[in-house]
Image 1 (cartoon, rainbow, N blue to C red):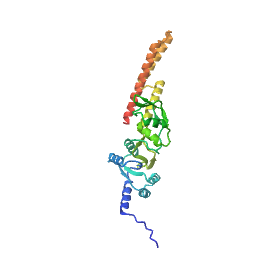
Image 2: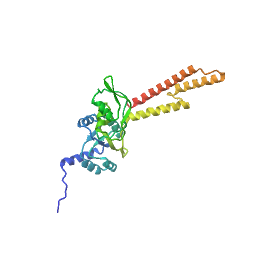
Image 3: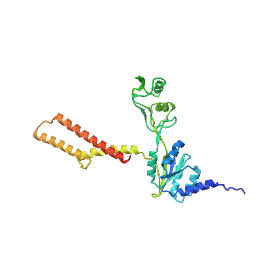
Image 4: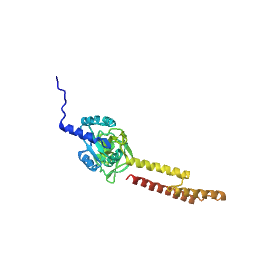
Length: 292
C-alpha cells in the first residue's frame, strides 16, 4: 500500500496558522506587487506601520488559508490571488487603505513592452535636447524637430502613441528624453473583503486627482445652472443680485426708450464674468483642500 500522505513542514503550518488568525481582520485585501522594487516595497510597508500588515506568501499557502477560513465570503478572494500578489490585513476600512496606497505611489518611466495608459502626446515648444542624434530619433517617432537657439524645438503637437498600444523601445527612449512619465508604481489593491459588510469588493482603486477634477467640473456646471434659475444661497447670492441689477437696468431703459450704453454694458458683462470665474476658482480650491 502506497503512502500518499503529504508532508507539510512546520514552517508552512506556522505560516498558515498566522494567516488564519489575520483573516479575522476588518479588511482582508489582495494586493498586487508586480514590478515593484524591493526598496519601494519596504518603504510602503514602513509607511503603513500601525495601519496595516502585509504578508508575502506563496499562492498555494494563501489559497489553502482562504479555502479553510470559516467565513465563506472570504473564499471569494481566491480567484484574485496570483503569483504577483500579496495579502494585506487591517482594521481600517478597505477604501481608506486603498486611498493610502494611492498616495504612496511614485512616478515611473515607460519601458518597452508596456501598454500606454492614455494617448502619449508631445506638445510643440522648446526642449532641453541639443542638436545631434536626437533629431533623427525624434523624427523617427513622427515628431517635427527644429534647432532653435542651440536647442531642439518641436514644431507642432503630435500624439506619438495611442492609448492601449504597446510602447516600443524607440518611443520609451523619446519619452524619457522629454521627461514624459506616464506611469505610477506602487501597490495596487486587487480585491478586498470587508468584515462589517461581509462582502468582497473588486476594482477599488482610488483616483483622487480624477475625482477632484470631476467635482470641480460638476460644480462649475451646477453653479451656472443655479444662477440661471435664480437659486439663492451663500455661493450664488452675488451673481444672482448682479444678474437682477443687470436685468433691472435693461427693463428701465426699455420703458424709458433710452438706448443701451454699449461700452458700459460690455464692462458690466466682463465684471460679472470675472466674478463668476473667481467664485468657481475659490470653490474648486475649497473642494481640493478637502482631499488634500
